[in-house]
Amino acid sequence: MAAIGLVSIDNYDDLIEKKDDKQVSYLNSLITTLISDWASENHVFYKRINSERFLFVAKYSDIERMKEEKFQFLTRVRQVAEKNDLPLTISMGISYGEESFEEIGEVAQNNLDIALVRGGDQVVLKEAKEEAKPQFFGGNTDGTPKRTRVRSRAMSTALRKIFAENQRIFIMGHRYPDMDALGSAFGVAYMAMMSDKECYIILNPKEITADIQRALEELKKYPELERFVITGEEAVNLSNEESVLVMVDYHKPSMSISQAVYDEFDKIAVIDHHRRGDEFPDKPLLTYIESSASSASELVAELIQYRASRRSQVPKFITTSLLAGIYVDTKNFTVRTTGRTFDIAGYLKNQGADTSLVQYMLSTDLDSYLMISELVSRSQHFREDIVIAAADEDRVYDSVTVAKAADTLLSINGIHAAFVITKQPGDLIGISARSTGKVNVQTLMEALGGGGHFTNAATQIKNSSIGDVENQLRAELTKNEQ
Image (cartoon, rainbow, N blue to C red; front, side, top):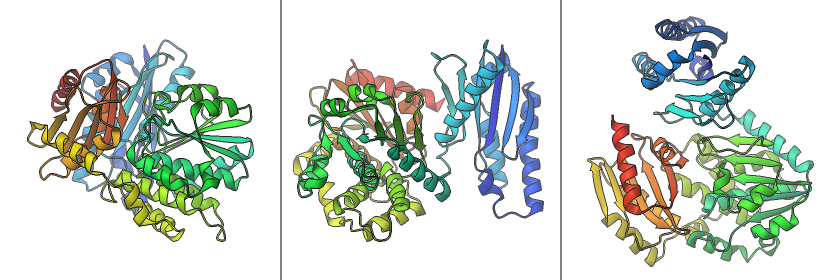
């Protein structure tokens, strides 16, 4: 059985940016030597197709052997890079099967795209069959920022074109939305307003957390914006052939606020900052996933920045909601922040974002604080630097409270990963996972059916108990240590 693979140097442009010709020549020689040695060891035929890409062909039996070794080549590249003081990592997309080479090659290319969207430094392996599930290896370092201002401007233009070709714009976040989902939704709605289009934001009144409730109370002061908010049932009735659905802050269809709404649309755009997983919309019109961004609100605010004229003033509620979304996902600018994050925050502040209102929206009431304290008190060490807090089986917690409990545990000195397991609405058992970066919680949550970021992830499991889910988590942690 044949296998086709593509190798990408994740951050080649950054590596050569400030190097002279001699240094670039040495770097290319180093990369070629690494690839050549690996190919020789594994009986792989390879060819360099451009400065940062290699194509290779191999027998599946050789790929199977590399898979059993968990593609140790990724680790070897990182070790050589560290010795040479280079931020060098690679990604691979590999496919195999009995199908035509054309089909296998297309799947391999798609697998590489997934690996890069997820942050690089990993291998995505998938058989060239529609029903096959991709397998992920590596991903043990946080993603290198790949977003450029040129790409952001291009995405802003592409989104504007999609809006121009449609009459009604529907925007939907994930179930039990947080301020990042709400803020980015209103940001996209503002861009639809700039295109003189009807726009609607879909919320489920039964899945509103405390911070979203406070935001909606504030929204009542802006009746021209409040009318955008509708239910899933209303969205299904209002949609027509000239409608498009924009998914914000998530990309897994199963996480939609309304599955009926998602199923209603053929035209879909995705704006997200979570690492891409296996589940994904089929042939979306636009995919803007940047795992290096702090939040969906950061991505949307940057898109607005390229659309808005100097004379236009973004409504205060929208700028404040976007800033609140950034606050939530960066934990008050302490994690996953880049220079771009602060630039966008400054832009929103200049546009009238109210930081005192952000603090009010994100504040914790006494009951929630006591629930957080109770969860923290139930924590136990899995090992010295990893803690697991398992809640009582009979008590239901909202996702915001659970996330804050995980953040609190992570703030304790010496803790590098924290997991909080609770019963959630809808007969679900949820895990909220946080890490300082020394543990990849994203891959752990993916193994349990969830996903997220390298340092911030979660999952929800149906038809289980807290005890069973804790045992599954401990088993994955043990497997991860081996």
